[in-house]
Image 1 (cartoon, helix red, strand yellow):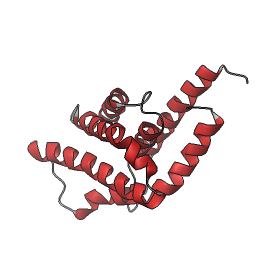
Image 2 (cartoon, helix red, strand yellow):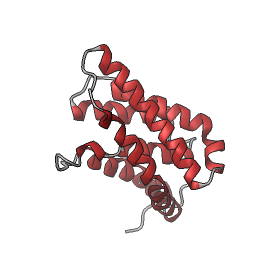
Image 3 (cartoon, rainbow, N blue to C red):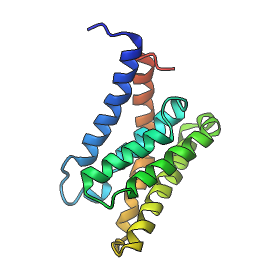
Amino acid sequence: MNLRPDTRRRVTLIGTFTIAIILAIMPFPTWAEPFRPDWVALVLIYWCLAVPERVAVGTGWLLGFLQDVLYGSLLGSNALGKTLVAYLTVRLHLQVRMFPRWQQAVSVLGLLSANQLLVLWIRGAIGQAPETFSYWTPSIVGALLWPWLFVILRDLRRRSDIA
């Protein structure tokens, strides 16, 4: 199937976000649920680093809003968190792109934690705050997965000729 370069780029971007959303809502065993990384935020961070002129705050808001609808959570809580992640990533993309992979993972940990802290604050304001430390494990798992996810998405970006 031969697609125009513009169409191929769009399909790649939308496809990666679709896969991230599917991974986010796919059922996990009960014991593994606390370890599920925020796939949508990870993919959003990658694309905001790679092509900040195409994927930015609006995309973060849209993805977060979609997550709010899919999770049945307070409308706007994930949207606000993903908007913050996208804004910070685009704002710092020149610095973060220069870091070695392990330092990028530390930066990703900070971005994911900022997202979770904002969502925690909103949930706490409406009386739904979690009681356990396991609330923070998705950020840690996401940071540990970052080097591999980065390599996979970078290869996909190069094959799709997204610049």
